[in-house]
Image (tube, rainbow, N blue to C red):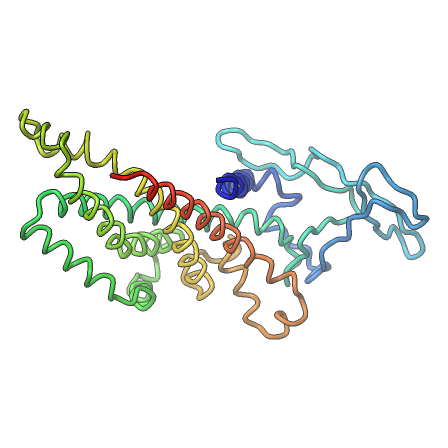
Length: 330
């Protein structure tokens, strides 16, 4: 369980940092500094050139042609204003005074800070993963519970439709769906439509799991007793079947979220998701399609580590939940 607890902590930190991206970013994600195009990550130092240890981390910046000055990293600094819910703020977690620049993960071809874009892109990619997961689990839970509880022709019909949906090539369906959308549809609306399609296409797997669990639970003694006392089918499903299915749904969510984040990454990488200048992890990685960028600027590949970290954490949590579920008999 220690591994699962550590994974929960890392996952929570990623989500909180993405939620507070504007505060945690030293500069707005869309700010262009063309003179710093493809600037490497800034070297943050603790020791000066004379070898002396400094109590505060700092960076070096050139003041003029002959002088280089030390600029300490400052915390809770004033910067560009942004909205945090209904409140307008202008404080950022850290930064350095001009003319120094602080690029933790370097910059892209437009001189935009990659760290700020990584945090802002996390809001898009994580939101897409959770929205698609909630939609998929909602549809799958409802249909799976109905199929397992009532059985018969309803069970047969739902399961056959689910099997057919599992065979569909979702990527080609998304490409076709994006092509059929009118050109006047805003990018954000098109993006939400595609995420909805991804969520709808993924209902079959959780439906099969919930159906199997419902088939087992509907024969339990307390369910039979509730039916004997005249409880309606809706009451039994709501009070007895679905609460027992909650741990399974949480496990399914831990498996589905990484899959849908990777789906969003794929769509944005192919130009079907959120358009520039709004970042997502997918369109940030689209820049490395160019060979010269791939081999010359290694920091442009850092956004690939974010979905990998989220996936590993989710799989660790899902594995822990699955082991615990197997240890507890129905």
